[in-house]
Image (tube, rainbow, N blue to C red; front, side, top):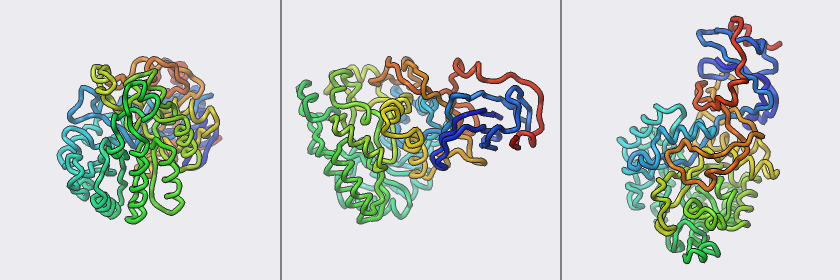
Length: 454
């Protein structure tokens, strides 16, 4: 049992931004209110649980973050990441729920593999969900048994990492997913316009002696998939949106009533193609970082709700793989541990989003899309929540991830996750910071005394 005293609650689902106390027991939020009837110096034993009281003055609480787009590399590439280490990085970054992509080895396109991933996820301190592939082996030729994959636990479908090129195949996939009431997520890069993946076609690519990836690779496929979503009535997600034109296409499709959603990554709203000159292959990803005007358009999309979700696209790679020459190095960066700070520094502090809106984009909205029991703090709901300090600076020096491929490695960031609770249990705690805030044990109190207000 935990009592968070005098905490600033940021709760988008109820539009709450207020100081209150939160009582957590039996893996749920038991009571939210002002000055709950418990002397802050006391710890009681109630319903068999030892009560710990945390002085949260100056700190914020919010629903546990939800990442709808991660790669945990298990099975097949566990030298990059394992489900256990990925979950540890997620908890450290404030994420209590993550959705794994299907591009593992073997692909998550069959019952045995998806059941194995979900089973391993249950052994971690957070909720690990899984998408199934759209096509067998990610080959873009034959659809998986989507009904079976849903029955096995899939929360959506994606061939992320590869685009789906055949229009008739896409339409059929959309029709099936609509009947199953699950979303389809699309990696939008037409290979006809990608000469050198991972870097935008422009000055940064030219300095590397490369042609790069033209923005048309994304724009044309976003346009196609918004059109097909309108025709089929499917729920689709445009993953890691990167181009200003794509944002506008999604905006217009939404206005026309199409069930299209979009996600933006912290790297796409924080960096531009110039980062490639600074960080080399640690700034190489698909789709690539683009121009300052594209970054601005993504931020505008997050502001007006065109882009509902922030997703990390956490993509671990071993150091020896990223140390190869730029053309040979794999694309992708890790992002779970830095996402919240980047959102705070690049969206909230400049005034683009409120803190309430940031938490909505990083928790409430992705939870709603995937139908997860998450993204909200309310009485009698699972106690998945985070505690953070918006003013605290910290150095990103030792990732919990198995990999270190991040432009922010070694950098000072602002906004520290201090505590992550998942199902009322501690998944991550900054013990050095919080140790002085845990109040000493004292008198025992009856359970009913804890549930009344002064």
